[in-house]
Length: 277
Ligand SMILES: Nc1ncnc2c1ncn2[C@@H]1O[C@H](COP(=O)(O)OP(=O)(O)OC[C@H]2O[C@@H]([n+]3cccc(C(=O)O)c3)[C@H](O)[C@@H]2O)[C@@H](O)[C@H]1O
Ligand SMILES: Nc1ncnc2c1ncn2[C@@H]1O[C@H](COP(=O)(O)OP(=O)(O)OP(=O)(O)O)[C@@H](O)[C@H]1O
Ligand SMILES: [Mg+2]
Image 1: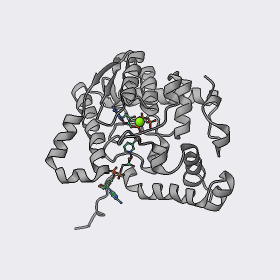
Image 2: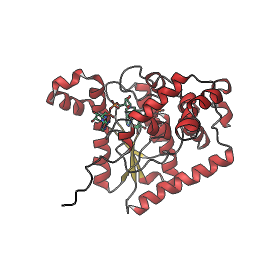
Image 3: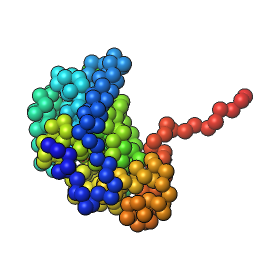
Image 4: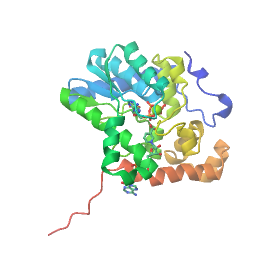
């Protein structure tokens, strides 16, 4: 499929699309990366969580190219919020790729945490983050037992905005698509043969019913990616970004706020400076 069908020209403030030749290079680069990571660790393969979403599906396709289907294991981990459609899409991906996979219901595990600290369940984000962290524990349980690496599915847009759960979906051994903005992940997905309905799916963390990334962040991905590329990664001032993209100052400020407030998620936990004793 041509990448031109993926993005709505009218709503794309900055064209970050990669050419087919560039997508070929990215595909090779990422598959080499995955193979090198597993090799360098002396590991037997990899595991990853399959959500039926674009990011995990794309990483699964690339990991099978890199490692072979026999060396990738998928974990489909439905919780109370996941739709049946997403969970059956996750299984469809595993079957299509011919990888071994497990379906693990996480709600009983999450419930044990809620029972242990009932008052914390009043904080809805904290409660939702438990499910994300339960999946991380299961990924590492499976990886550790079989000498495999945990593949992450984080992309550049999520990393720069802190749009992930600390020590949850970010608790991984490497991030194969970590340098790509979300709209480029979508393009790469189409390029490597991910089914069209999955390529076009609305991104959601599925932490509560009806959640979408774009609604929670207050920006659509095309705008977010463009501001990240020009203003956060790039050199343009707020005023120049507003002029270049026809976005508002408030939108640029929102991206800055997401970026600044999530710096702690992109750094190792700090310790005091060394004292000379
Ligand atoms: N300044 C600071 N310096 C050091 N640490 C700081 C800190 N501020 C908070 N913290 C720590 O970070 C914690 C808050 O971070 P965290 O637990 O991550 O929680 P938080 O950032 O509040 O929420 C997670 C966000 O990521 C989104 N998400 C999560 C999972 C998956 C996806 C997806 O796209 O699939 C999206 C979710 O919708 C939500 O917007 C605090 O409890 C505190 O421990
Ligand atoms: N129900 C689930 N079962 C297994 N893994 C999951 C589940 N939900 C989330 N994950 C893992 O957490 C990751 C982060 O979720 P995220 O929503 O950002 O990515 P995605 O679902 O793959 O794509 P999208 O952002 O387009 O929805 C997923 O890629 C997947 O690895
Ligand atoms: Mg998702």
